[in-house]
Image 1 (cartoon, one colour):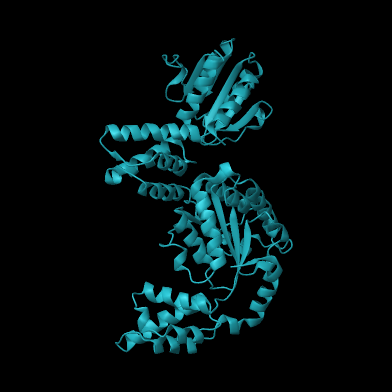
Image 2: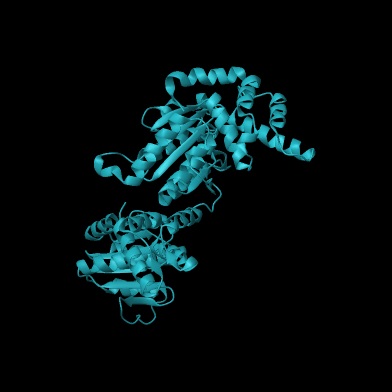
Length: 491
């Protein structure tokens, strides 16, 4: 939500004359600025207490002896006119039962228009205050506030002689890149970008997005993945899927919301293992210039009741804050397949949390989920509207196999004219993309052992000694194709 919603919410809470507000935030200066603005609108004096300065009327000297919270609350109790009192980092003083009791008495006897606001990074409301306290969380800065910060930072850079080479559209992209951060975090990233090379230009947009994503992936549930270079042309086959992604990428870059075109939301890729589903996730991020964040479902599960659900909720909150971003969930069935209550219902609760997020997530988060065993996924995850589209990635056909061979040979600096690609294409019938790559790698080792250049026969020998998945697991692949026929779009 934009920052004006935070201001409006707090304005309503103050006007509603709640005696006690407990505000969770890591942005104390920003919160105080908002409270100062609203107190001015209400013509109410603002008092701020901290454990180092005591109780201070905004901009004046501290009241003697009020470093002690008991004395500060006693002073508050003596004021019988509408006022706003902010107690910073108050979670520390709530550990004292006597302070909690005194706070309860002050709130019960508060005159109309008198509000105590306790701030802190988090709050556990003491049982004694549950009937009096309203817990509220300051939301991240909205676009208007972040745009103002970016404008001020760029003006500072220009005055310092740092070249700013950005169009108005690039500046909008910069605002989007730092969205979800606190103002201080955004300011630090902007200054780091400027100090790296003495220039702020379009190359800094991706750097800032990646740096922002890294800030939200520190708990181990999410992992920032380095996106591969190049675009969809480096992927052999999957022409329909690549065209679909290219169209969505162009629409997203053009900002087509004014035309009634929704932001692309995500895709589910299912099909034969080793055929490039994970590669597509990396290529989407590379082609669209966005960070790629991996959510591994196996990392969600904890040993304590409710721990798994909390991990997922925190991870999804972090993803929302990273937007714009590509979220990659690899083998989604590992975490969201529901198979009864053998796990105490954890997977069902995870599914419920994930479905709510899919419904309500903000624009700018593009989800790429992959699944090998799609039949184990619950129908409510697969219904129309959860994903923009479900694609089935089958074994590559002749043209795709030839293209895949060309990609892997070119990546390793080999001249394609030196190889009989037509013969290798025929020989690799039934091979997955991963199996073709493995044959090329094996051929390189084979040629190295004989101290000569790799030739067609080396790749052919590797292919002839390979039992492809299409043979080893023929029944499973047939079952996948039967499932996918009426339920998905061929990639």
